[in-house]
Every structure is written in structure tokens, then in C-alpha cells.
Length: 340
Ligand SMILES: [Fe+2]
Image (tube, rainbow, N blue to C red; front, side):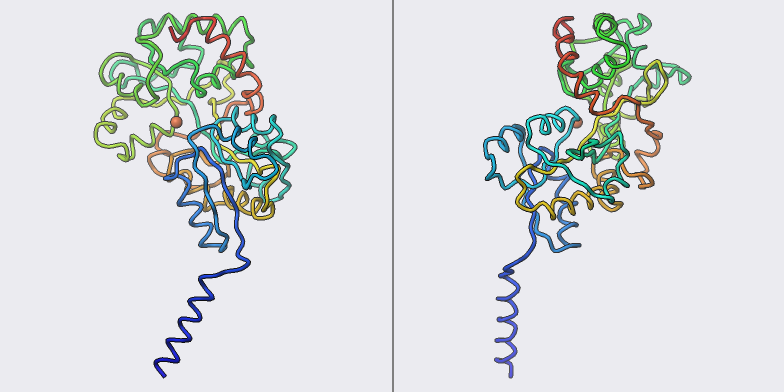
């Protein structure tokens, strides 16, 4: 009896261990495993679809291009509008048509042809010293170049994609001549050479090196949550986060993280289903909880530390416009000697 039960259990084990037709999908991504893995694991638990993940530091487009028609990539997940649109322009993507995705992602945050879509928004905010900047002062991006901030501004390198995207948005608003003027004036206001990361802005404000700077909002969330450690909690406690607009008062500059389906995706149907999940309420909440990014889907609850800073109202310049202007923005950063 016992032996027969054991035999039956063993047989079941064998059957369970060798699923012949289990669905699977392969994700190539430059995102951190710690952020993405919980979402993909939750997806597997929910649907039974196995997710193969290739985490890359960079060179994702080059790799998919080199693999050509034999590429196992189904879904590509990246940060920055520029890198997303680069995939499309290299012909590495294919169109997705899904009512669920169209309902979840606002039109400005996805390709009209369906080749890419945003998964989260990454607002670029201004941090000011709580001690040295009056609480009534809410500078715009343009104000950073005002002589009022002479020797007081901290920012990371001008050629970093976060900044070329911001400068590209300014190019869309004001044109090449004005952006050149802006970069020259902003450079004259710097407290130190443009370098380091976004978190260094808060650190340097606490240290008194600068009074004002530019950083992505999720870093504020990360520091405020305590996940970055007690030191970083002190940095963020020294600053007030301003949700700036450009002078036209439309909204705050946001960049995106996003996804596209690979042109030669071996599992297209599963790829679409995964994107539907990632734009759904559960995964969108996990993106906000795990990395303090702003969900693209409306009505998703955000973690308290993030909500405490305020609500992101995105500027009117679209990711596609930002991507289109980044080469010129980068050229002007170079020409004005911004980083030197
Ligand atoms: Fe970042």
C-alpha cells in the first residue's frame, strides 16, 4: 500500500518535472534584477508562464541586432525614451495591438504604431535646501540659470541621458539658440563640476556645497524610505522636493522606462500577455513600491513616501519628442563646454 502510494507520488513528480508544452517568454532587460524579478515571478505564479530573463548592463540593442532572426528575445525592457525609440529605429521591434495596453497607457506614453510603450514615469525634480531656500520659492527649470543661483547649483554630468533628455525637452520648448544660452548660464551657476549621481545633489545640499539641484524623484523616494540607509535619510531630510515646470507651466519633465516586443519574438502571444500584465494594476503598484517610479496606469496607489512629495503632472513634451532632440541637446552640451 505504502509502496504503491510512493510509486504514485514518484510518477506525479516525474510528470510535474517534465512539462512538455509549458508556455514561456524571454525578456532582455537593462533594468536591475532586484526591481524586475519580483514582478516576473508574480507573473509566473499567476499564469504558469515561465519567464527567461537576460539582465544586461548595456548593449541590449547591439546584442539583439547581432542575434538577428534567431534572437530568443521576446520582450525588451529598458529605461530612457531615447533607448526605447532607438530599438524601434533600428528595426528591432514589432507593433503590439492590445485593448488592455491601450486602456492602461495614455496615448502620449506609447508609440502610435504600437512599437513601444512606457511602463513607468521618472520625474526629474528640483531639490532645494530646507534651511537656505525660502519655502515659498518654487523655481522652474529655466530659473536654474538665473544669476540668483550663482555658485549654488549641483547637477550630474550634462551628457548623462537624464540630463540630455531634460535639455532636449527644453530644446522643444525654446529652440537651439535659447538652449545654448541656458546651458551657458547654468554652467556659470554651478557650485561644482557636473558629476556624480542624482543622490549626490541631496548629499551636497546637506554639506552646504550647493543650495539647489536636479535629481530624479525615485531617488528621493528611495532615500526617504530608508532603503538607502541612514546616511541617505539625512541627505533627503535636508532638502525640499519641488515639482518644477518649464516657464510655460505645463508640467514636470518626465522620462520613462518602457518595453517593446522584439521583431523576431518566438513567443509573440506570451509577450503581449506579459506587457498586459506589466501595465496592469498589480505590476504597476509593484513598480511604484519597488523603485518609487510613477505608474503610467491611472488610479494605482503609490507608496506613502512617494505620495508625500506630491503628484506628478507630466509636461507636454512627449517621449518621442525628447528622443528626437537628444542628439542636438548633447551637441550643445559639448559646444558650451558644460561638463568641463
Ligand atoms: Fe537612475
